[in-house]
Structure formats: structure tokens, C-alpha cells
Image 1 (cartoon, rainbow, N blue to C red):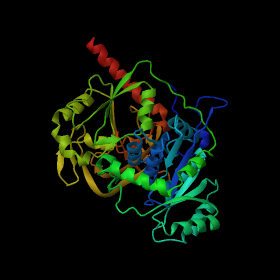
Image 2 (cartoon, rainbow, N blue to C red):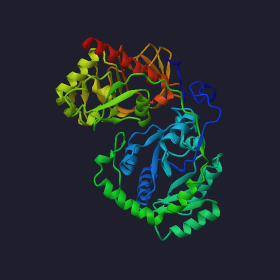
Image 3 (tube, rainbow, N blue to C red):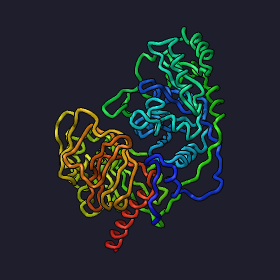
Image 4 (cartoon, rainbow, N blue to C red):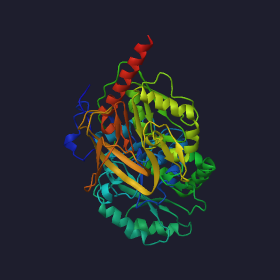
Length: 487
């Protein structure tokens, strides 16, 4: 097994080169691309990104899509528009070269790649650093940026706002703006004013959309399948943007992006396939595309199953992934599927390697409180109870340090991770130390019991590829042991 390989933990470039293939001149790929950013959250990034993707798709443009940061739900909307998976680009999780590699790989075959930003353009770690911000992703990938400016309650005042962003950005990645919530009558004059006073191109506008496209809940937007008439709404939005946004101009701007060059991270695939059972349904659907693809590249055969609908975990599984999601919304249905609860409890009890993140962690508890305050029996692997809290608990990026050996690696191993949850537990575990990348806050977390590792953090395995290899090694060993017992 190769030594520990990490990336993206503390922004130290000198610590991020050991796991790269030693290539003198990595190939350069032409990747036409745009990044849609905004001055702040609530500016309409997701709506406009999805609308533009739909509009370009109507024109027959081959597309790929990405989301800055650790968000799961916005990528689901990209997928609903494209019919393709959408990826995450996160400069806390990975080093610069790995980020560029993931963009180049995910963009293969696309005539246009669209990257949706996160929060405000300069909002990074702790809210005051540019580390892990949309602007850092733009700089690392040398991607032209379109700044979405919400003009609600403003007209000429957008000029100093735009000029401030242009003057503040050292890399000069902002190459144009799109104005949101602007009346057709005002737009021509506003466009002329901005281009004259701010010296930046205006690529169109979005009028006020009378009916909100996307609804929200406690972890962000509701999923695409929960949004009524989404396909119809997106087609209508695509029609509007085709008339109000300069799509040809955006394509031309995307084509000015310089070719991408990046080295592929070094991997150590397994000689035999390892069957990995992956819980995926309405209750458990928070998975990073890059994690699943990495497992497959390392030799995993992913076998998806539903804790809501199926009677047991897939037969012959060597490992189990219980991802995040919304088990609290489906607590009653999960509880009523007794055979699945017993299957999970029995398999983990027999030593099946299991990584459970956030929602998957909640499912393993003795009981889970739903959104109405009712408590339901769960898998019972853990003796604790999971309950709702009034606000986000332990929110944001963390660096995890293992205090003991686990299925992800040796004691002392470090991992970039992320937490985002309103629910909490009476049994959070103490195997790992979680530390905020800014400030002094830290806490103990993760239940580590032999072949089980469970807790609230979400892992991104391109930040520590060795952890993925270690997990699959444990799964492969278990699978071989079970096979030998059968024969």
C-alpha cells in the first residue's frame, strides 16, 4: 500500500505534491468554461445556472457542470437539467493540480463547462478568508467569471458595486456581468451605464420571475424531484434567458479560457473487484460524484440499494456506504422496514466494513427523532439517540485527525471534511479530533468500532486518496474471508 497522500488540508502547496504522478509535462486540454459567481448568497446563482444550462442544451451544446464547494443539492439540479452527473470543485478538499485534473476529467467531450459558484465570490474560510472561496477556484482553474448582480432595489448603484469587485480582484478573472431582477425597460440604459463606467461587458439580464423556481428546507434547496413541474419551469426559464442573455457571447468568452494542464493523482487499484453496497434513495442521496468514481477506479463494483424499499443489503457485499441525506424526513418508513434494519445491524455485527456519514450515521442509532418530534426505532447498531437541534451544529469545513487506527487509516492520519446538520446525537464518538481551519474551535467526533466508522463529517477522498484505498482494502479482505468460508 502506498503511503498516506493528502491534499487541500491547510493550503500549504509544499505538502501537496507527494501523491502526484511524476510527469514532466502534463497534457494540455482545451476546456471552454465559465464560472457563474455572485456578490452574495440569494442572488439567483442556481436558478440562472440551471436556466443557462437548459438554454445551451436547447441549442445542442454538449455540456458539463460543476459546483464550487461541498454542496450536494445544487449538483442534483445540474443533473436534472443535463441528464448527467455534476461534480464538485473544492479548493479546501484538494490541492490546485488535483482540482484542475477533476475539472479537466469531468469536462471531457463537452463544448462548454459551466461552474456554479458558492456564497459570495470572495467568501472563503471563516467568512473572511479567500481560501476555499469561489474566487480561489476561478484563479486555480483560470476560468472566466460572470458576476451575477441582483439589482432588486437598485439601479445605478450597481455600478460602484461592480467596480468594487473588479478592483478588488487581483487575478482579473471577472470578465462580465449578468443582471438579475431587472425590468426590460431599464436594462438598455443600465447596460450602457455599466459598460461605460465599469468597463466590463454586460451579457444580459434576467427579469423578475413571478414564481420562485426552487423551494428550500433546513439543509438548503429541496431536491429536484420534490419541486413541482421542474422540467416545465426550467424550459420556460430557458426560453426567457435565450431572449435576454447573450448566449453566443458567453460561448465566445468561454472559448478564451486557456488550456488546462494537470497531473492525474497516482492510484493503486486492486487486482480483484470489491463489491461495495451503497445506500441510495430519497433518504440517502448525498454522495460526491468524485468519491464514487474514485472507488470505481480503485476496483469497487458499486451496488446501489434502498434502505426504504429493499429487504436487505446486496448479497455478497464486501463493504457498506451509508451516505448523508434526509433520513429524518423518512424516519417512519425507514423504521417500518424492519428486515432492512435487521440486515444492516447483522452485517455490521458480523464485521462488514461500513462508513456512515451524517444521515447514514443517524440511521445506525437506536432511535431517530423526525421533523415532527416523533421518535422512531432505527438500525440499532449504536445505542445513542438522534435528535433535532434549533440551529446548525458544528457547521463548515474541518480537518479531522484520527486518534486511533480505523478503516480509513492509521492513527495520526488527517482528512479534509465538512459538516452540515441540524440533528445531533447522544453518541457522537471520540475517535477523531475535528478542528476548524480558522479559529481555535475543535471537538471530538466519530464512532470507531473495528470495521465501523460513523459520524457527522462528510469525507472527500481526493483530499486523502490513501483513505479510500484503506477502506477498500478492508472491504476486500472481508469479502475474501467470506468467500473462503463459503468454499
